[in-house]
Length: 116
Length: 112
Image (cartoon, rainbow over all chains, first blue to last red; front, side, top):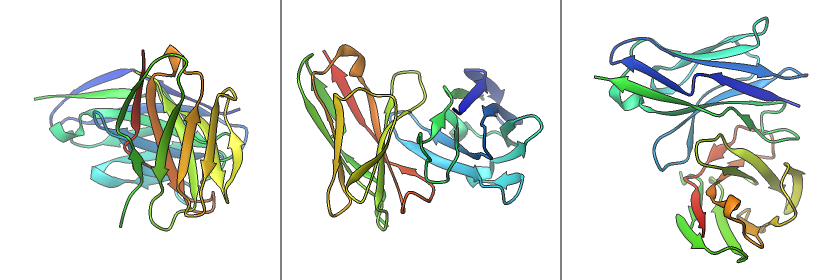
């Protein structure tokens, strides 16, 4: 079985500061890893994905994430926070790009708050 | 390029009733997955449909059932609704179960 742990249900940063959202995963097979963002009353939008091609993955809106196998981590970063980044962020794992036997397994989410 | 669409956007039902939610996949996609997102939680996988058959299923009771039509659209049916079924129901589509899943805006179900 796979699992995802997102450290910190709420993260608050100042506008222009570094954003760091933490994600640790558990998987018995090489994982596919994803970060999705959810704005209020909306569905999930894919930010980026890791598919074993490169350990540093660049996504939309200036976000990137680094896959570290030794630490079983896939933390999401952005150098400079913008007010529009305020949202809920979900890390997800799968044993297959299309969802695998158990679909995507999501963490509980991290609510990102941007202080002006 | 049409994205994933879901209907209705909101729905209110009472305990014991039945509900049907609908999803149209992104243009070019043929696989539909359904997820339940309870308030304050991450989405949980319900099941996946491909070639009009349920291919994978998460840990949900038989009260949750689905269907996929020849045009790849899908329905999620929930019978004998419980208060705990109140959630945002998300549909995601992909191609041949092998590509990244793209999500729709969801249907907010409230059970009273």
